[in-house]
Figure (tube, rainbow, N blue to C red):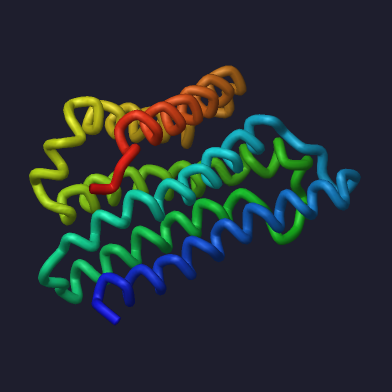
Length: 189
């Protein structure tokens, strides 16, 4: 087994656990709708994280081009996978005690979710650099602009409960994820 394959197996397990959190949370929501009232903005972020997790595996194939793996690069990639898992896990609580359904839970935990989301976006930039500067530059100007907008909007989301802002943010993030995922990352090579 080559080093990249070893890293891919470990990160796949971590990302798979995150996706399992999302799918189990949705299953519990379907099975017990009386436990907590769904909230569409929350479900939008669930969909975003599911799509992000699927794309993450695709994006990380590029790591196969790394010739020399250092322990630091290995830890960095594992950290990135952990942050994606954490975002997925934060979307579904173990218990709703003291929360007013998914809406109350989402706004109560927004600082955690969007704080980790900021770290994930910054880590993504580092991940792009690790894949090589040619790769980083191939992403074009849209990449640093979109990352900056996601970070700025996430910082705003930490501090505001404004439903209109959160509605626009999740819809814009979903639209951009789908657009960029299929427009800029159609092929791995």
